[in-house]
Image 1 (cartoon, rainbow, N blue to C red):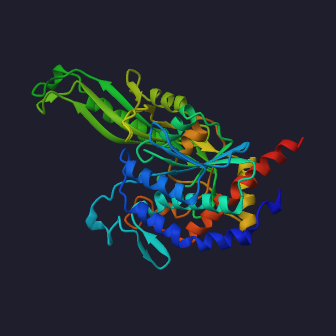
Image 2 (image 1 turned 180 degrees about the horizontal axis):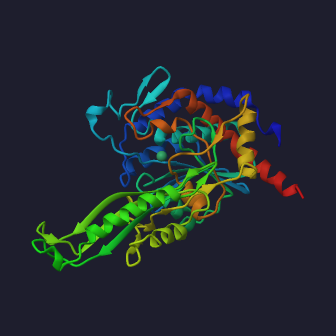
Image 3 (image 1 turned 180 degrees about the vertical axis):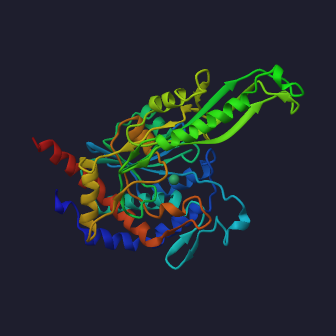
Length: 409
Ligand SMILES: [Zn+2]
């Protein structure tokens, strides 16, 4: 790998010099609430900053994702930060204003500080570093602010890859990794099981056929199925859980005619939509069940609907893959020591970029996964600066790595 692709001291100095701007930008983003489907104002704020720091082009696609471009070279590197956050829940649980971006002891606190406006703030300033230090090389770099991830992970990237006409060589997910290199996570899917019975007056239940009793027996089989699901040494175990049961009854004095259960399924390596449905189908009592994978069909803030099945496949990239090697090489070129190479516990837009569309994907981000969605959400300022360095240095290192991989026999 080309060790002279960049001068790490210069990148470190310049990134450090922009720390106050990165902090200010992140605090501005935290001050703009944007749950899924309400990202318009935060996208507009991101666009202003991208234009200010000198991106070559910014555009907002019909779903509402913002794509900021730098360079126009052969190797296409895309980086992603979703722009929506979860809500604040009970405001009394917060010890400070979740939308103020409190700065204390080297951290910025607030909703979205870590998940994941931090990634966006670092990406935009990486863009500035790339421009000023001329780091783009023969790359086209897109910094993407995606929408609706918290509601339907992957949906924005399914749209970008299928509809925006860009064919990237790789995608970097900037969700929190504590500055480690993450190379996958378990998948998931949302399944509903419907059982039919025969309704009747509850004063004479023997005239009907109560589907709640059938569902309760099936729920026990689901619990046993969970025990049998396979485990993977890297990703962990596949799981299944009943998370809701409801019935359709004409009254509380009637035996219902149908009963439905919602199943949360987490998929480990080797498990697919088909295998997961077949396992449920094979359970005693499910012979005549209707088994459904739910759809997501909520319009984006632009009003566009882009329906997607709630199947979010497992993805893992091998440590030996040129993308994973380039990420590790970038880390080593910037800092001393060795990066932690691991996986996320939660799910990310990687389910679409790599899981559904097969684009090599890797993760590197500021902040700690454990504080996402919590009232303790925060990000270390040091991480913001370091992540900006990584995103600035990575594209050239990656272009070199794939050139080298092509030269090898
Ligand atoms: Zn996130």
